[in-house]
Image (cartoon, rainbow, N blue to C red):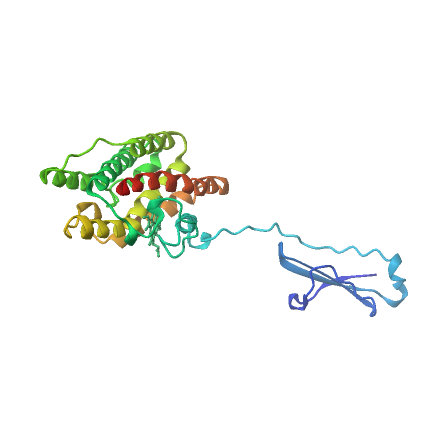
Length: 286
Ligand code: HEM
């Protein structure tokens, strides 16, 4: 009777089952871009069993593994997935990995910006409101795991308060928070209560954006408007790259317990994070 013998995987060059009928052995090979394991079988057909092919029904026993979809950055951890999505939402002028076309003023290269002190003050006030909100949220910890993100060293609330104090001493009028900051703060509060995965996406993007593009803005404002004075907003106590790495590790750990759907939901929130942060950045150029 016919028997099935697996043969080497390296023999596969075809995408469709292949039958060779000229020898007493029938080879049946399966290869597909969806099936990672390629299988091939030889059907040893004894001479007395040989029949014209058209009458032969070949049934191949094969193991079909469910394809596992991979996500960009996944191997390095979930933060890398969030970073991958975020980098694509930059414009090419903002960052070399960016893919978005420039539509708004703040999406142009920072070196082309023409900031004003009044605009920067509006930005600083709204940014402070957003950081106050984030820092209150992790303090309150409606979801217990938020407590992991207390005292990370990335907090910006006190730093921005010091800068606003300094501007006041210089005689500048400190504006009230404006609509971009007020509405983003409300959104963050709501998400933190009912949608932790979405909230974490905003948390990641806000703090990490400030450490990257934020620093470019800090340098621009210092040079162009503040006679090179470095603001506290752009200073961290300790080694910034280590602080960022500690938060990455915590984010990766927390998200290990999420389902793929929860992770995707978090990633999908990135666009909203760019929208709201973009509106606050735009204030600098107003
Ligand atoms: C003026 C606007 C911006 C500029 C110039 C800018 C620029 C940059 C640059 C140069 C990087 C570093 C890329 C690298 O690692 O090589 C970066 C990283 C990043 N940006 Fe932005 N960005 C801006 C706005 C934003 C906004 C609005 C968000 C989201 C709210 C954002 C989120 C991020 C994130 C999450 C990273 C990854 C940081 C990391 O891996 O440590 N950026 N950005």
